[in-house]
Length: 186
Image (tube, rainbow, N blue to C red; front, side, top):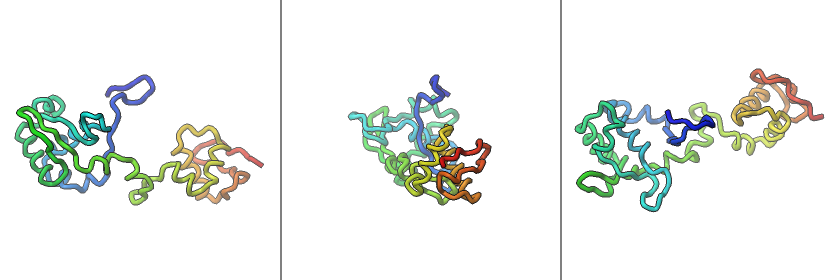
């Protein structure tokens, strides 16, 4: 994997909804088709470039086969036909060698706003949401500055409240998830 010196990937990322496990491409189609679908998402423009709108990309079997190890040209063509019929992609333009493909719901599924606050699968809300729901959370983070990751603070806050800590700064004397005793602000 391509990595920079700061521990982050240089190439960026895409979002993958958990609902993909229940989709037809996961449950009913050959595994190679999922590989092709992910390839389309990974290679699509993540932002409008002026020349290429967000969610679009120029694709060809010739250029893609190096990344799609084990996928045949027939699988490529059949998958694209199915994705187009299913409404997942739209072929905007064809040339003798390439196709301009638009992933129809790219903005919907490649936006964190779609996923924030979704608690149906046990995913905790982001710390900003927690702070807006409980103003004492921000004070908690200030009173305990050793927080390296905001989600860790959110987890500790929920554990403290679940263990019976009152949500006032002076009452944070619990040990949460192996953290040192929380400082008293009184």
